Length: 403
Image (cartoon, rainbow, N blue to C red; front, side):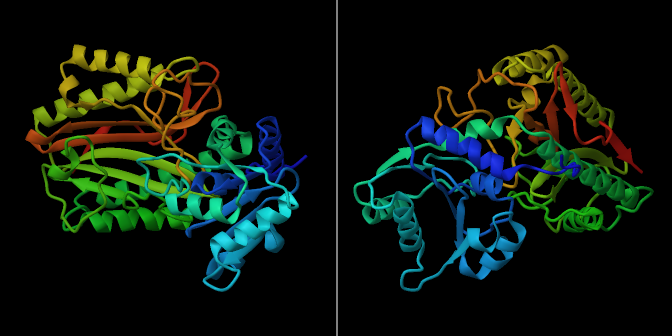
């Protein structure tokens, strides 16, 4: 029995995938998505990388040669399981991986599982048109099967080691929030820029053990004043804009612990707030609290959204709510859409997906009033429990006025 609370049985993950491969008649799985590589290899791969999973035995990860030694050191696969590609004869991606697959197939023409599709998330990593054509040519006679759903299904319900990694990442995010609240209080915000706020949060979280401000939307997202209220709730990488009294401040910070991600947003008013601003803030806090009470197994994204929008309509603030209440989250490779992409719009969340115990996702919502230069964001990693949900960040819910 392993007593490490963050332990994940990666070889068993491989075996589970190989079982599904066998059931689907797939001889080799060629993973190209960041989520797949992180989930199977347990290593940070910033370069275009590929993981080849045979019918039995250990996978082999291919990455840019300059980073292969470091990734081999980080991953459970080790030196024998991580190979570098380079623009040299026989070492290019297509050539090296195709030769490896030919060895696995022992001269036969097999069925190769690939990861095709589309995503609004930039680093998703689906196989490109060029790669598909090049591999098809190099592995002539093999049949290519879109099989991303195998990994998607396996990733959906989290094991305890993964959950504990998310808990720790969220604890680190809380440290960042407490540190910046202390820094901003009693006039400490005067003269600060959004970029400085982002850096102060990052410093506190790095000191606590965060490996990266993982978000591909600008690291730690800091917005003040009119930038909090963009229509649609845009991502808000920090700018050199200074903080001013009477403005809202949105702090959306991120941490990474052993590839698990922390993501939490908190909102303030700087210096002072009008009654109208406080009305907006109270509306937002109320709907966040109601949403967290509503998440549970068996509910769907559609039914939850309908309930929350009805709640906002009753409160007289529905026009300010961006109609979305969650996004996915994974081990570095963000499982951006919830579930198995089996809804009416391909590669988007199925609105009728049934949440299940031990799913991990982000409760995420945006309140935007561009006409009044005001907006709020809430994000928190949540664990679906037996009869509800557990917010993993424990930072208090509110929109405080910082004097």
